[in-house]
Image 1 (spheres, rainbow, N blue to C red):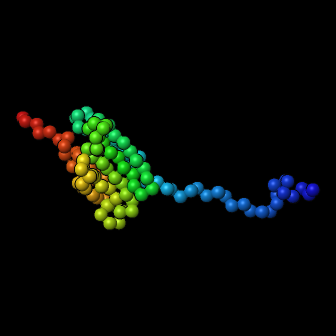
Image 2: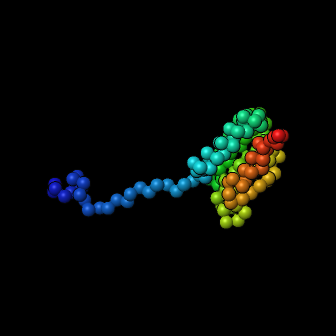
Length: 123
């Protein structure tokens, strides 16, 4: 055997480096998730929500908030990157599944839920 043979690891053959698989699921990034969970915490404190669920699929990521665990979600926030160039990748759905708001900015899409937290204070 020669010193440059396959047993020595110097065969001269270039092996391809295994590539990372393409991302096959959509997820909320950290700032998006922090904004959603901050809203969730305030809605829990106000008594509107009690539970949540998240789903990360290949086409969309979803955050659903529930008043009671056995019901349909009171609100569902969805991120669908394929709609980025159209009406916006964020959507807010109501309890019956109707689209309440769509947009390119998560803060704008969450604004109808934020308004529920505002209380009129008299002087």
